[in-house]
Length: 153
Image (cartoon, rainbow, N blue to C red; front, side):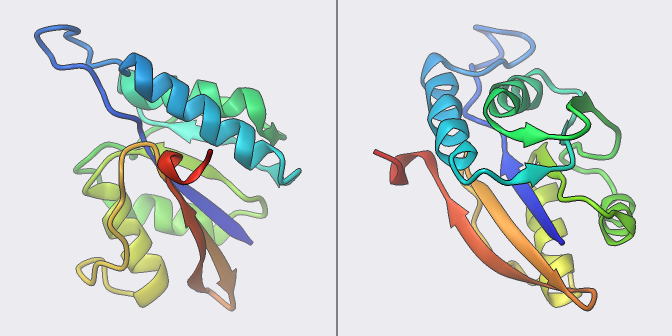
């Protein structure tokens, strides 16, 4: 099993967009990332995102490029300060390979918990619009790869 963690793209300031939607560049970066990852021809379970506009926009753009069984869906417990136990358990009980589009510090803590068993041992420094692939082997995960939009030409 694999799990893909995505930090939403760079958002507009609140005074420009009260819902903090993506900047134009972040939308282009998400398109670039989605097109690149989509070429891997992998089947994903679904693209799940938080209720925040920037995560929804990032997920919808990625969802256009990725092959997924269950679609793109807003879900609970992917907010910045949400309890990671919910998704840690969902991932371990899943048969598919989910894509989770969310926020910091949630993504850092979830990745750390899955890889080291300790959410406080930071294993990665997420960047806006980046994707991290974790692969499971006997309920322990390891980092398979990570990519940021600036790595793609």
